[in-house]
Length: 470
Image (cartoon, rainbow, N blue to C red; front, side, top):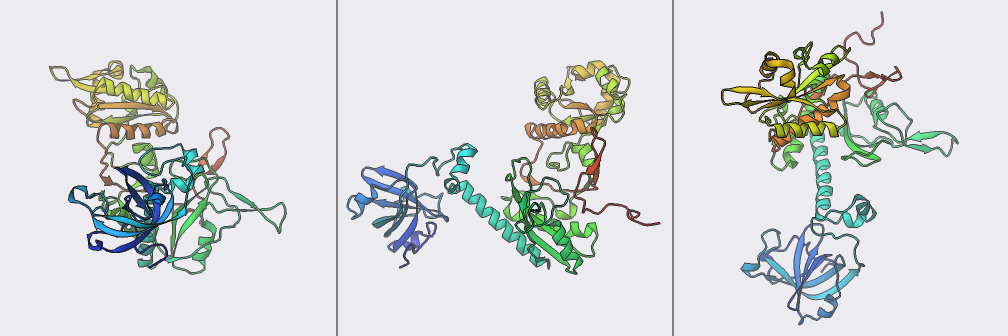
C-alpha cells in the first residue's frame, strides 16, 4: 500500500465496502457521539467520514486530534445505515472505521475556522492565507481558474494559435497605469519595468512573421486596488492575428468566449456569439453610462434635452444654456411609486450628486396622471411628450440627470444598474455580451488643457486617411 493513501477522500462508495483503505488529509470537523469519535477527513477532492470507537487500538490517540491536524488513517470501509446516508457528498453512503493513525502535522488553535460560511476581515484572510485557501469556496475558485485557463488554451490551440511566452523584464512604455520599476545591477541609476501588457514583445512576434499568437499573460500595474483584481497584477488572454480585419477578430474570439461561459457558467444562457451587438464607445456611454454595460438589463437611457429647454424647471433650463450640457433620462418600467423614486434620489445624493429629478405615472381613477416635482414644473404637454418618447405608462417612472455628460454619466450608469436589479428587470440567468468599438485614443484634460492618451497608444486609429502622406 502507498505510504500515504490508497484513495482520495472523494473516491470511496458502496462498491468499496469491506476494503482496507488508507487516507490522508486534514481534520475538517470532529464530533463526539456517546464516546464514538466521528471525523470528517478532507483533502483537495472531497470529504470522507471516519470513525473511531473505544475498541479501536488508536482511540486514545484519536482523542487528541484537533481541527486542521494533518493525519493518515488506515481502516475498513463499512456501509452507513440508510437513515444516516448523506446524499450531499460522493462518499455519503460509507464510513471508514479507523484501526491505525499517524499524525503528519499537528496544529495549534486556529485564528480562523476553515469549515462553514463565516466571513473574516480581508487583513486576517491575507495574514493566514494558507488557512484561507483551505476553505471550500477558495478551493473551488482556484480550481475554476485553472480549469478556465486550460479550456482557453485548448480552444486557442484548436484555432491554430500558438502560445509564446514574452519577457517579464522590459522597458517602460505608455500604458494605462504606473509601472513597477526594477533597478538595473549593470546600469546603476537606470530601471527596468514590469510589463503592464506584453505589447512590445507581441508586436515583435507578429512583425517577425508568426501568424497567430496567444498568451495567458501577466500584467503588472501600479494602480489603486479594484474589487476584481489583486493590487499588483492580473492575467489576461492576450492575442494577435496577421492579415485580418476587425470583424475577423470578432468572429474568431466570440465563439471562444461564448464556449468558456457555456462550459463554466452554471447552465446560464449565453447569447449566440453571431448576434453579439457592436456598440460604439459614444453610444455605450450615452445609453448605459459606461463602456462595459450590463445588457441583461433592458433599460436604455435617452437624451431628452429638448423637453427641458425654456421649461418651467429652471435648474435644467438654465443648465442647457451652457455649452456641452444635456439632460439624460433613465426609464424605470414598474418603478412608479414615490417611495421608490425617493430611494433612487437618495442613491444619487449618496453618489455625490444633488439628486435626480423624477416623474412617475399613476392611475388617478379617471385615467393616467404624471406626478412628481418635475411634472409640476414643466407642465402636462412636455410631460406627455417625455412619456411618449420613453415608451412608459401607468405604474412606470423616469429619472433625470443633467450637466456635462462626463460629470454625471458614471452615476447614471450605476443608477441604471440599481433600477434594473431592484425592479427585477435584469435577467440574472443569462450572459449578455457586446463588442464596444471606436474608443477615443486621446482625451483633453479640462484643468491643464493637455492632450493625453485615453487608450493604449498601440491601438490602430480608425479612418483610411490616418497616417497618409501627401
